Length: 191
Image 1 (cartoon, helix red, strand yellow):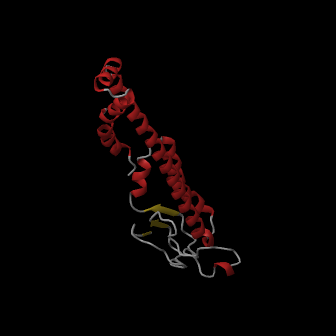
Image 2 (spheres, helix red, strand yellow; image 1 turned 120 degrees about the vertical axis):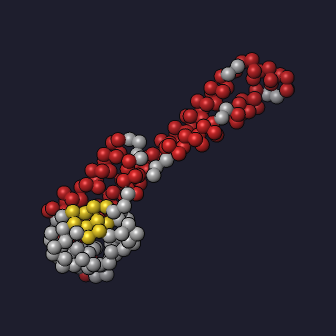
Image 3 (cartoon, helix red, strand yellow; image 1 turned 135 degrees about the horizontal axis):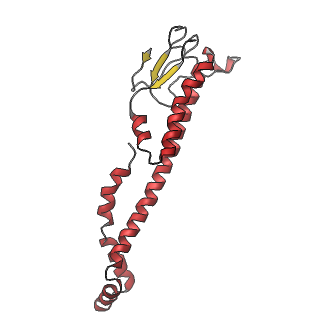
């Protein structure tokens, strides 16, 4: 078994070539972790990566660090969490039937797939948060605006000779949404 640091930037080509007893490796989840084989275009099998050539026993890949775990756990939709966890676990099923010379390519594609799924759900999360904040702000504004709506707005408009739109704008500013949203957002952020 080999456990690599979360700070690792690159695994060079042929880094583990011929490690016949290697069964498990723990690596960071990073795009372009494997350096491309310089002779890729001459390889008749068209393999991009050759980090694990000869590692016939490699059957398990785990991810080091907790950043991906925290992010997945903070997704608000259980279906998103389930889908990403399933994708993370998929590699260990695939490696069972993958020839040693294809393992690095398979792992590289898998990492890209996991990262893409996480990014897609992260983007969806932020869209939902933005929509929810907009609705929260509108609800707060309406609640504040609803207080003494008819009397207050029209009386103040007449007294101050200010139009109704200005009074509504003032209510929007003074409804407290900026304070509420500032205190709600930390609970909705991804980790």
